Length: 172
Image 1 (tube, rainbow, N blue to C red):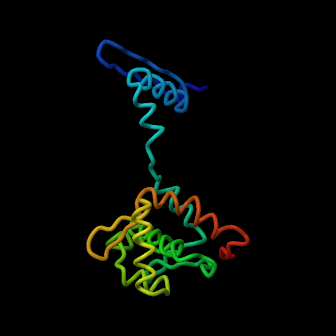
Image 2 (cartoon, rainbow, N blue to C red):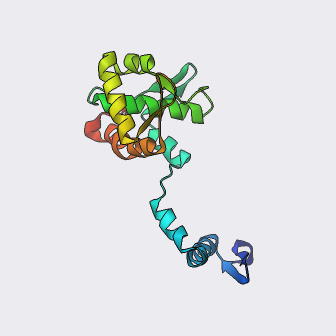
Image 3 (spheres, one colour):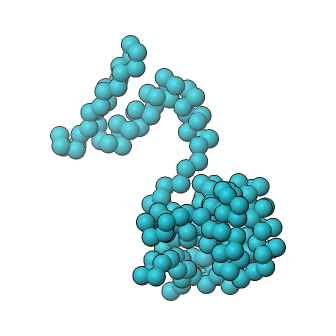
């Protein structure tokens, strides 16, 4: 390891002190170990925490959602998706547009979802109620819905992979 690639970090907590020198990965690993020894619950909390890295989320959207001059567009074939998956796709599209600064809100109204899902209002409302109960969607105001962190994780693991698989109909 060359000197310019070496990282040195010193951490003090109370009377304890730890100095770590090495590559960035080695230093991070040693610091996490130090913190897990000082705060045992930190290891448990990190195992229980769910977060979605926005870069990973946007990467999962490649080939499915596109940014156009008019706004966000779905480019993948969605004909095989169930109502719940289609609703989640549109909520994910909205979150992607908001994250990219192309939309002012990261929510969709019930009426917008009815149009996007090409389904009846009662069907979409029923699926949204189920999705809220599952924790993948949250209702913010009357008729306004947003994908939760758990919902984005669900989208990445279940829907994006389905749309990108050869039998899923992802765009070429």
